[in-house]
Length: 293
Ligand code: PDD
Image 1 (cartoon, rainbow, N blue to C red):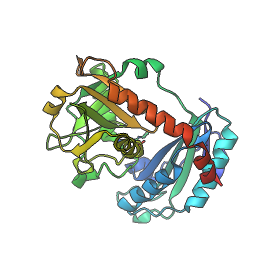
Image 2: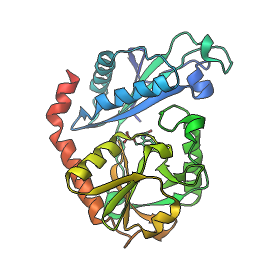
Image 3: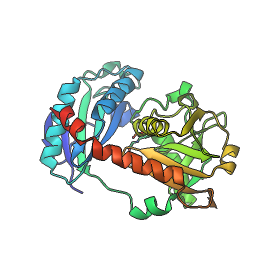
Image 4: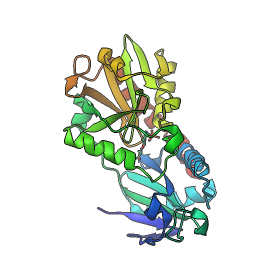
């Protein structure tokens, strides 16, 4: 895989990070994933804002201004020369003692990874994917708030491994109180009797940027959207479902635990939102160019 890594401002093929970086030792880091569309960065401003919120959630000082981030990202994407790029921005606590206490870490490290985007197979969008409701619970907000996008993704890794064992493409997690939350790297939506439903932020989920845009698009186009706390039983009556994320965009979910959702095909609301989201990305070209200046 071709990969360019901008390590504290220096672009290289690979990056050797110290084994004493607390990002490596303790998952003490934050990150974001941004993708390009027509080779333009999408929603970079929103991702940088969330990166800063995540960093403040773990009291990590981000060493770059947004302008510096944009400069470095644009420069690295240009060097990579991919048709479309996947950009992962990571800020780690930095090098310190082998001690849980971060106060020995003097300087955060900033890494910007750029690789070609690996699109999901078109059959996933045409037929939908199957998701398993797993036993691994999403972290409680009081433990490690899922609203903070840290480099500590072991909760999601374990859920994904359980989904793999069950032969499903992704895992849907409940919170410790039994309410639906999200999938391992995406937000979850379902529809029932023409109402679009999605777990509310207080269930303990990442405030997905695609989620926010899809909710807005849905409301602008006359859909009723409810954000709330729902137990898994609510899904038995679902007519359709989908997940959202920067890489996946809007991806239909047509099976849950090997049982079809609705008629087992991507539903009309899902297909409409897929079209609306793609249309928005197409239309955003000018705005995104402006962002890069
Ligand atoms: N993941 N929930 C979780 C746990 C996520 O990791 C992500 C994003 C989302 C969707 O958020 P957004 O729409 O802002 O991409 C929801 C990225 C893509 C990742 O870690 O690869």
